[in-house]
Image (cartoon, rainbow, N blue to C red):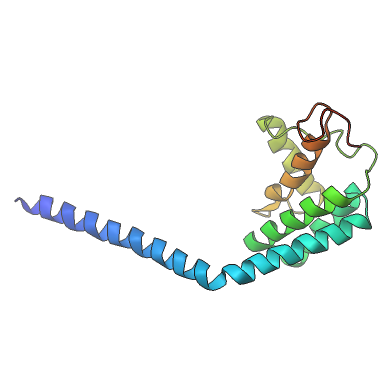
Length: 156
C-alpha cells in the first residue's frame, strides 16, 4: 500500500475519532446540565408570562431588550427569546404593533426590518440582536387574519 494511502486512512480514522469524541462530550455535558437548563427555561417562561400579564405587546419587547442588554450573548439571546415569546402571548394588544412586521417568509423584508430594529435599540453591532426579534414575527404572524393558529380571526 502506498504511503499516501496509509496517511489518508490515518487522517480519516483521526477525524472519525474526533467526531465521536465531540459527540460523546456533548452527550456527557447535556446529561450533567439538562436539569439546570430545563429549570432555567421554565423559570424564564414563567417570568415572561408574569410580565405579559402586566404589560402590552410593546412593553414586552422593551423589557426583553432591557434584559438582554444587561447580559448580552448567545445564551442570553435564547433566554430573551423565551421570555419575549411568553410575554407577548400573555400581554395586552398595542395598537399598530404588528403593522410593519414582515412575515418570516419575506426574507429580504425580514432582514431589513431586523436590522432596523437592532439600530433602533442600539444593538446594531451585536451578533445575536437580529435573532431577538424572531418572537415578534412569530407572534404577529399568529395574530394576522387568516393564520392557522387563530382560526382566521384577528387576534388583536
